[in-house]
Image (cartoon, rainbow, N blue to C red; front, side):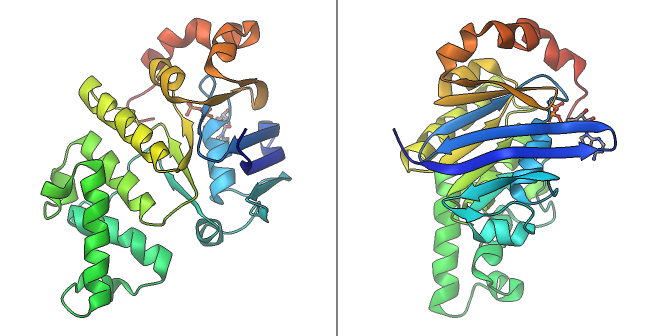
Length: 263
Ligand SMILES: Nc1ncnc2c1ncn2[C@@H]1O[C@H](COP(=O)(O)OP(=O)(O)OP(=O)(O)O)[C@@H](O)[C@H]1O
């Protein structure tokens, strides 16, 4: 069994009288794709926001390979090796695809944005350009590197986000509903990408409602309901868990219909 990369104990966050994340424990092992699932409003995105430093927890510890990152600012968490994508796509529409990825390097290496974009000077800039192109090659967007991001499809913009997150050279990548709004071909493409990223040793925590995908790509799954962890285990165990079926899987087919677009 691989060592734990991310160890979460007693993670708790309240919004007024509502405990959105309630004493959650989570272990994400090195090299695995770990699914975080549960009904709408069960606390998944709040968890991702707590882990990535976007929100501060009220209680609990979060360690990434031994480094405590709970309640630390986002840039400190990113520097510790945690990157994320967002439920609502965040690309810079008026920048080219490559420039969007280079922004990721800017965050990770402390490069000055101007020097990142004036890719004409020294060897460092050329190297950066090559690394950005390699990331685009990996996600299948190299031929569109010079296109404005706004002109790409929804699914392709999601790939830009993933490439940009990888520019941080993360040890753990948090993916918050990366497949929302994608057509089946795009879904298959991204699932293949996840598998190739795992093949390269990248560890991922995946929040996703598409159970076909979760059950086929995840090594381990944690299930939340009303902010609490109700189950954890391999896909087969989760699929057969009566409480998970009652709380979530039994009604899963209706979930996407109830949700509003892009939420
Ligand atoms: N900023 C906030 N202020 C108040 N309540 C919030 C806030 N963010 C989330 N909540 C509440 O916390 C609970 C958990 O929400 P969260 O978005 O984490 O659930 P989720 O499992 O990600 O849901 P979904 O699958 O719909 O994305 C919900 O009841 C939600 O309304």
